Length: 185
Image (cartoon, one colour):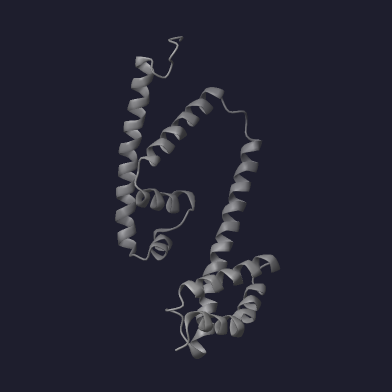
């Protein structure tokens, strides 16, 4: 068996153009090149799992399909956010007091999430920020959907506990006057 670098060079030389063509048929040229490069990066990282012979190209196409799917989800997410922003611009003016409360709540959530461990933060980000399903998260994390369900439930519970702690601590600091060092009210 050839050394890893030689094997990868052979796979790249033999299949890059096919992978690029596959991507070009499905997206814009610049995005297709980025996707094809990402496929080859994944092939390098998973070289031990990369099948040989006639099975190589279909495997690379499968990776390309996943890479492009991630790309398209990003485009849809961006469009959805752009539409939400446009819709918000058309709404009536928000009460400044409401904005202050929303900002304070956001600060509490961010402070509470910073107190979580990396594992909890990651699963909450994948579900909440990235908008992924538990099935997709399971694929990313390499575990079962049931495990994701359990981890997500526990992470939400821990976030709620940290949020309550942060909120209580901030309220006590405000009442005692620690948030206002000059004592001016």
